[in-house]
Image 1 (cartoon, rainbow, N blue to C red):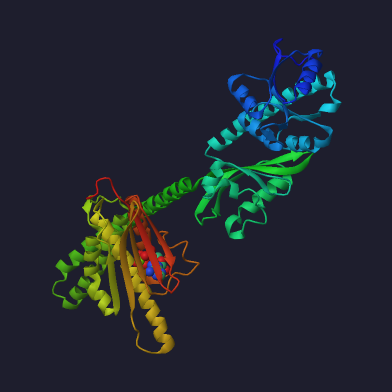
Image 2: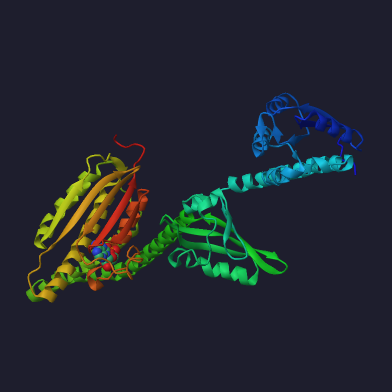
Length: 504
Ligand SMILES: Nc1ncnc2c1ncn2[C@@H]1O[C@H](COP(=O)(O)OP(=O)(O)OP(=O)(O)O)[C@@H](O)[C@H]1O
Ligand SMILES: [Mg+2]
């Protein structure tokens, strides 16, 4: 085997203080197949200087030198030339030291008393080959890792026992924790049920069938408690026909999912609008005929007072049907409201002023904590006012229900309740919360209350209040959420982003 590259002599740095040993090495290598060009340094510091000024293919190192001794010698040289192969020379009585150096990264060790020219030459050539191969593997590894860490998609890999052995940076970003904290977790046991309930069956299916599987928009609670939707591939790794682990790609599709939901909702609303327009048309035509007939009756039978009274009642009733139909149509027409620089606190105060007497009648206190920090934003005052009115009316209903149930339980006069409205600035959002001391929202209703026409108030409600609130919030690029308060009652939180033309 010829290990000499480009017919060039290998340039060896021999760090050896014993001139007899140095001469011996020179002699041994002079008769070898490959040609070696040897430069000798007698101390570690000479060796370091030589490294700094010359270029070498490898280092042949005696660990016991006048200015350094033992493993320390190797460690300092290796630090100065991390990519250079180093072969250690020991004596019979310090062979152990050679073994330690190899563990620390030396390519090999040779026992001086047992070296022949051939053995030495071959050992040096192998050491260089091995080091080059190692460096190649390392550089390939870091090339692949840089690709994996560069992509935004999360990637993690389990072993045959479903333990995560690798997670890339993207995965850490999606999970909201450093990637290294993900490794070591047992996918099926360490992840709590409420975190990956829907993910586990997909993983098990891919593991059992040994076939790749795409999981779509699975709800996952990240370790930091964020509710996300994730999609990606589960690709089983197979060795000798058996499961040997899983490669999992992860994409956060939460934003996409929300957009889809909004699209579906606006389609639902559009469908409801079309239905409303159809119903309105069907009702309006006979209504028109009836109203005309009633007008004619009023002319023809004006002398019959009792009949006239009944005709007026009928006209009033049909008028209210017409108004209801008109409201239904208005509800589904896209808002033509004017957007202007709006003071949210002012809108809240005005809306509350409208309902004060209504609240008083129901013995409901209202408290406002409005932050003076929030700037004006571009918004529709009419829509926002309608949203706050809807929320206050709902809160009144909830508090009244609570009072009724308390009254029936304790048979005493109700103590009323409280509605609290707060505003504050949180980063780039204006946050408005409307909370009450009412009955709260049942777990069953909570996921549905923002759906159009979802109501628990039987005939008293139409179920459009909150769906309208959500539309208003989203029309302003914001969002509205609902939750129950630990002490009872419900809280609705609206986040509206600051617009570029804020008044500040
Ligand atoms: N503050 C609240 N406390 C408890 N439950 C509430 C509260 N606000 C809303 N809800 C629940 O959400 C449902 C939907 O509310 P939404 O305002 O959309 O319709 P509604 O009040 O029933 O009818 P309307 O169309 O007249 O507003 C309500 O029926 C009620 O069950
Ligand atoms: Mg309502």
